[in-house]
Length: 208
View 1 (cartoon, rainbow, N blue to C red):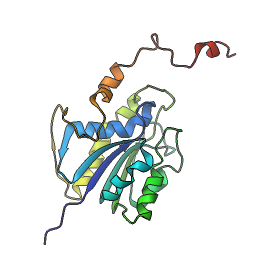
View 2: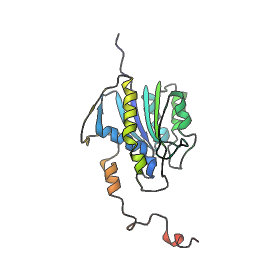
View 3: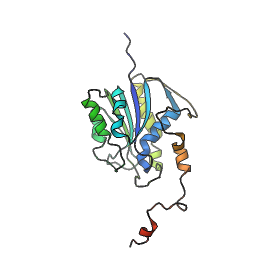
View 4: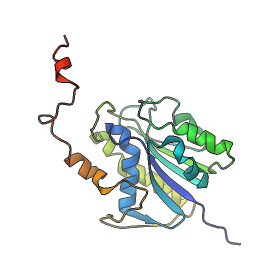
């Protein structure tokens, strides 16, 4: 007797404008650029959509989430959390005002009776958040490849198939515009000499 392939949602959440808070989005972006999946898999930049993600979560049988998470560990530490423990880490301690409250999304999906049967959270302890317009710090960026490896290992357990591909410019529509891709985002940022990043200099100069 054959069984239908599970619906798989691979989700990156966070805000790319606040340095390491963009880890989840950058991880799913890198995954989409390096691999192709079957029609039962959705790759989604969840950004800071919050409760608007609930229908996507309700669709999923298997949910994999990439995010920057305050585990209370050393900065740049990668950690996986599985199953019932996931909601505990998804908003119990928000790191900033810009972070998606994904705990509420899971709670609403559960209330509506369509909760993923299997969950995996792959999170990294951020190094820096308070840098508007900044990108991932090197320690966090280095976690993208091992985070993807953890996700693929997990998905293989459900019989999920994928194939590597290079130069992935034909990306799913649920990912950011190419103008927000990591390399374009980093190279397009003005230097510190060209753009003051520490607030209004009139007030900064008045500080003791």
